[in-house]
Image (cartoon, rainbow, N blue to C red; front, side, top):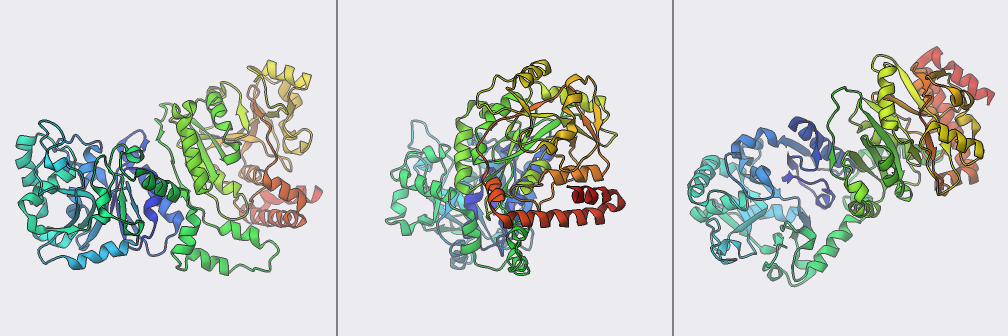
Length: 612
């Protein structure tokens, strides 16, 4: 079992072979209320483990909010707050038929098979109920500074970052009553805990030493300042569990901290696909689905991508959002890869509202992004941006899967579906909120079109108004989007009419129309069969039209595409006849599915396709 208070849990997944139970307490997300916090924390962890698809691992969640009353009466100075006391409640929180558990803090890294630790239960005597490693600092010796008065402990005391709990026996000796009596007695003189649950565990063990089984210290090598941890190992092969139990974490002072830091960082950047595919070595549902595909199909690689399950880490960084009172808020939704990272700061400056971004990255790139975001003053100051990592796997960019991850995790009633290469006009967030009200989007099916323009210049004096944009358009500094290469994509926007329009106007769907739109967040998702380049947005607009969304062009809104190098996927499209053949095949299958789904309403799409 682990008590969860951090987002980056990837490192704890290595070598898991036992049932895992989580007491969820959300420290990385702030939302409107505690209930939403717990649900969101549950969502993050559920998605993480489900997408890892690790065989033989089951995940159960227990809401820490329901357990708070058990420990809220205990004053605690530790930085973990009330959640640092939750381990005391496990005999009550966990199912009564669960006889034994391993309890792990989330700031540990396993360097061996956890089954070895589980096997130590067999070494317990009949009376032993708790397995712990001795504390490796001098904290409980009371000699760290003048008047230092720690809680009572047996010798050096024990560290609770790794615990073997024999729940069945603990219940038999009335654990809940015993730890409460211990805490009440000691709090009369100590007034509060300094190390949360660890103080109470140690005070209990001091009174009942026969109940503890001391684990070898390599099962909890503690890297807090000035510990004796180096006595736990002589070679790397001796290491079992590394515990970053200092608030300083990677900045801790320790004799071998550089080695441990490099080990930890190397593991974070290790390809998680290798871990789940090679090291676990058990057949999965995904492998069985892949076996059902026809490997002789010319489009096998495309079909394989459609059933691929990518690992997903929602809310990779801290996220804070409070819903607006008018229920008319809107989230900018986009996806990106590492080569578009430079757009983030500019978009945050242009759009002050909430943002939901899905980032398609390798494990190593995700760590690079983390360092980039932590070093950026702009990004550090924006807490209403949700960053969702979709980990790379396969040869295609699953663009619509990544878009859907961003769309699903928008927390507002409305979304602005855009691409990361576009900068919205200044003030677009407020303008769209007003337009949502004026066009009664709460009660009608509308898709508001934001006209798209582009510049070929890497340095642009961004227009501050529609009048300024039109002037730049006339001078050739700006163009209507894809005017030179793909006119059909945005021609139905009717730019000539937009120049003089003062009120929103309706346009009709046409073949290959792919505008950027504002819709309700319950809109259809993107079709995930389309990967890489081609038809990924066109198919989405077709489905909106099939569902009878009105396409309304906004007269005083605009966005500008910034130049960048061609993507790898567009190069494949241009150079590979097989790629183009498969895209045509996917289009035909999409049309057939659309016809089955929407009947006669979808016939016009087949007609339009034949006329192209």
